[in-house]
Length: 150
Length: 150
DNA sequence: ATACACCCTGGACTAAGGTCCAAGGTCAAG
DNA sequence: CTTGACCTTGGACCTTAGTCCAGGGTGTAT
Image (cartoon, rainbow over all chains, first blue to last red; front, side, top):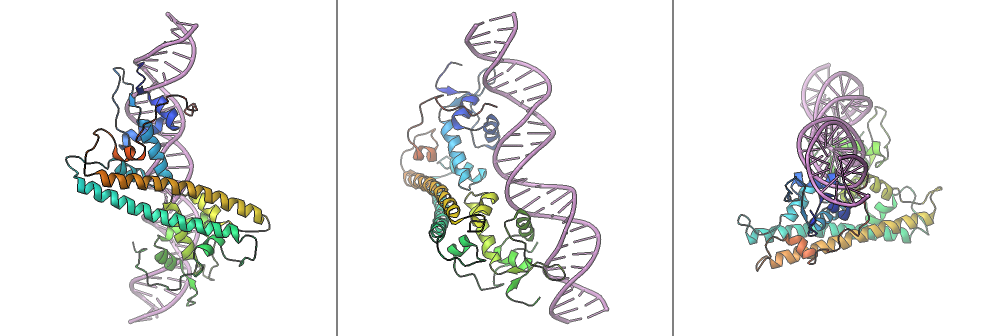
């Protein structure tokens, strides 16, 4: 095992800054392909496993679940999944990202306004970040589809 | 209880599209202030409770924990927390949002490229989304701070 | 050849964020 | 004045995403 193009699980864990167990967990969850093994059973990761793990961690911090992340990683043309299907899914993912971008931008604006109007008069009893997000409270009661029915 | 400026827990749940239990849970977690009660113990929510709950749900989908969300909602000038402190925290939150925005934008670009290059030649054995994010795999082994040490 | 760091598996445990249930009280319509 | 929808609490339970052993094998530097 003195092949430098191959990483032990410990090396991947250090470089990706996650605990070992997380890598084995991701393997079980199908986020990380099961790597080849040495004769003694040690996992031999390719160098790009680190990139993959970092991607997973970043995506998680952006509000994606492991299941969604697995889908993103699986996004490729295969005999079963044609090019059109891949394109469709990629565009759907972009749409979801655009929603997140819009909401984050909205929130950013509210925080910027909050920081700016901090010096100055405040309406008491109003939560500043909500007030900054939407100065007019919704005034249309009960015309919403019922959800709480169980 | 025929005061239309006040909502029952069920009405808030329907309008915010969350289960009842979630509202009580948020109250216990301090995300939703405990509302006044009728003499018989029913919660009487102000109309803007719906806005607050929706904000919580949106922020969660953007990768914020309930604890972080509670901090955002608490961001206001009080006798204990001066204006400067509020401004500082708001700016810190903006910085975190900017990181998320940059990463989402990066990911969006990768997906757009994936969708575009779908028709055309593919390097086999490379995960398209990772390839699109960073065409050059990292080649600097072991010079990373050790983390896995426990 | 022995220490010491590293790796293996399986299974138990945890924390966050809900979700469900039982037993009982309340309110409005018929 | 009953029926059905709605509300109360406390506590048990669930899912997701890890995290932590115990018991055992491996690799290599001294």
